[in-house]
Image (cartoon, rainbow, N blue to C red; front, side, top):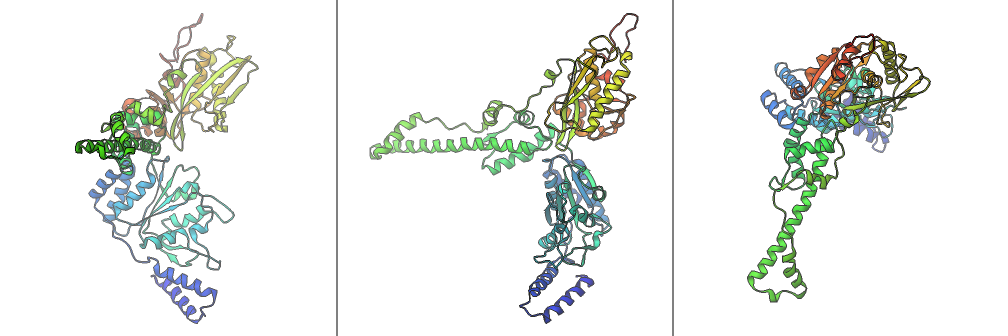
Length: 571
């Protein structure tokens, strides 16, 4: 151990020699010394630095996730060139079920390092990270030092799971305690309160996982390198199911590929009709339910085969008269009544899915929802991935009030007020009138805006263009195209500003079967991260002002109705 730690240990041993064993402090000091001896001060594992083998291993363990694999291979390459590289602090941010935790385990396997997972969800005491001082009864080291003692080396892979769900209480802020652990400039002499001696954490590879960065304190976020792990496309989910999930479920349920067959069409049905998620956790559960149902059929079939075999044997030996009286009816009548065992492999088609999983939970309802004016499709980002969101508007006689419904936050309410103000100021230009033919759209008219799924809280600026399109449809009496979704923030002058979460939103539009997506022009750079097959299926319209949005959202552009003395014009 380092000289400073050695001095402390020698001093404690001298105290221990002079201390009677009956003293309570004797046991505490002895425990402390045992821990100091057990800690891996200089013991480390040798990294496997074969990049080609690492690439193959990562590809076998995980499908897609190119950005993440690339970062791990970069670390390996630099480590090969420079031996004393400090361990990076990576943070995988993405929706649940996309494989953040399992990638951490894969990274450890690739490097040939020990792996230790620390669950931080709900931790609200800084002593969990830093340990308790030895003056307290029952004091113990924090989770970091405990983890090092468990793995027995000083360069493991530490997975700090759910770092965005740290709590805060009267016992201090654990997020603040993590600052020292995760700062590459400080963690070479991390001091645990129990040890009271600096320990070098610079060789540890820290990987944090989070569903969102919104709840991570800014100071802690600054110390980590963020790697976004987005949701999967339908094609990626099908590949993951057939490469990883189905073989895993078959093994868990004692089935073989000769007994059950799940074609890709069925997997696509499960993905689109029975699950709506960014990851693959629900898909895994549904496949498990199918395997259980097939296991029942297979087990019943084996039982029937056994009964049939037994009756055949008794007939062949000609010793039917020696069978016990109570067995006679079963062997004779049951052989004729027994249904034959199911044919193998059992093919899972849509009818079998309906029998096992019940009727489909999700249906594509886009075309039905857009069958009247005053409805538009927006795109929203959630920690679970992207979602499509309908915006509905209606008008009635009234006093010029704007009513908003659907649990909206302040920013979203402001977007609605901005939208109605822009339309009122441009009503004459676009020939938009209320029910009485007046260009003042709120004259004796009330407007009601509704964002369905009223139980879900919604906020953010990116619904601005959707609200404008929805209200423009209402006042013009024209239908918005049913295959178009849009996102973007608006200003009072009609500009369209960039928003976040473009990749997740585009994937949501693709999942919903839409054909065109309207995005702000300044978000065009975000399209590079979208998979090629999704970009081929969708057409993108980039807009810098609301004129361009309305032109793309309506068939044939947003044409003004003909009026006496006015020429037909187009936005």
